Length: 141
Image (tube, rainbow, N blue to C red; front, top):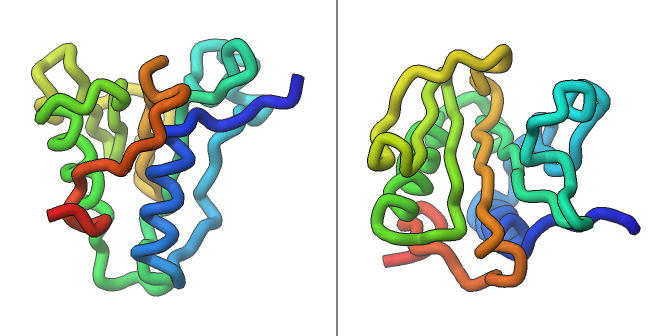
């Protein structure tokens, strides 16, 4: 079975692409590479044929400035805190936010600090729910 990205991941990626058409995509990804598979614990590894994570390159404008990723990562976190149950956790710039600490940013101790991209993991609720996210930088009010 060929893996696919969950619907929530497809929707978030499409919204980022639509709002930042010239962005750098070198650090983008969703399917596990050999390092992820060897570790065996990543949401980039498909479960029942569905991958539950995306990486979004930090450079949203295709140039180094302005750096809006800190704001976008925070708005994704706030969408989850406001009740979007499709988002499992967000990692960016050495910090992680999840329901474990009421969506507050805290230090991330993993090997990859995610300085070049924002990592968003999704719950099983995102498997088939591709509804738009309530994220102002992506067009929500």
